[in-house]
Length: 253
Image (cartoon, rainbow, N blue to C red; front, side, top):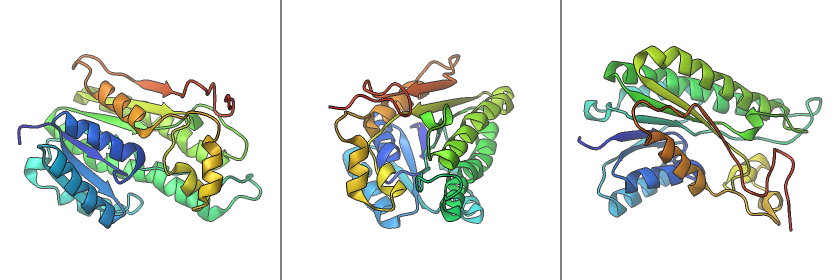
């Protein structure tokens, strides 16, 4: 395979899907992963039909270490020349105080946002080290830079991503592997629908009266950092809609 390769977690919607499309447009072969097989199959077919690239689809849950290991071990040899890993899979669940929060929500966020990112990185980083190159891009959040009311555990998981990004940068420095964190503010995806357990009306109110970022905005940023010259590493980016100053300060019409 002559094309470069990107491995994307959470590729069936939002930032992951938009990133797959922009990299496909630029000639990358794509490894897409996700829990929803029907969506993966449908998106894989779309990418192959719309772009002259190859697509490898891996159906698993990043929270399941054995499934992660099995999926990555199943990658054919010609797909292992992975240039970019996008650790995108993540979620918020619930919006409650620490004294009233759901422990099920906490475990779901910790297992996805922290442990899932670790499981993927632990299995892909050795492949990149063997190749002698690679770039890991971690999708964090403004919630990893500050804390807001009722965001407690979600913010904690994204603070962990911020710390892990810095730790990866140190650990992988001797191996010629770049590491970047991209920390968005408000992006209109399925994020709020998931946080509010499928309540679409409540989710719409999060973005009501303002123009948030779109998944394509973050995807373009991922492609920009990945396309810098070999001697340039972008360590950390915070990216917000123009109408947002921090996690809780916005201008609405």
